[in-house]
Length: 113
Length: 110
Image (cartoon, rainbow over the protein chains, first blue to last red):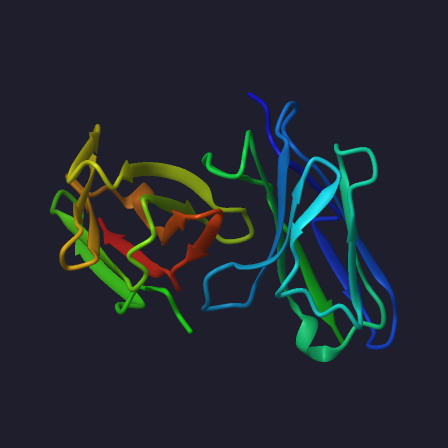
């Protein structure tokens, strides 16, 4: 069964360092999402891609976060510099289109020390 | 501004009984609603959905009810099983917007 792949599964870093997360969506899914989930809260959308274009990054802290999906397939989310408050689960999801069910990857658990 | 709310952070149910998880929303533009299930250290898994043109959708032990006038939906699990223990998120879609609720942690006691 097709799945959304994410790596790494766990990342521990010190504040002020740079971190990067990778996501490979389900083949054929044009829409890709990055979410941040803080413990005890629901996932919060950071950025949404339609193919290689960003369609919503209104909640992305652009001073330190960046995301790209250069060829419209896999995607990278970067944080530089990381801050203590960035500790969270970072989830990637994909869907056939913006109005279809989203399928989630296993997430990357980030801990910033 | 929380557009999708799950007011019960946790719920405990005996095995074999019914679990009822509730969700409220504020935006009348939402026209599609979903429930996701999440185990620790895993991403959410799609469970069941309902379009705003329906008021009920059933899939095995899972039934979702939608009350548009009250802007309320609920997920019924019957009978509940220990493997159902997880965090359940409701989500709402409309106008290319997608919002998750805060989640309800369900514990099914054997």
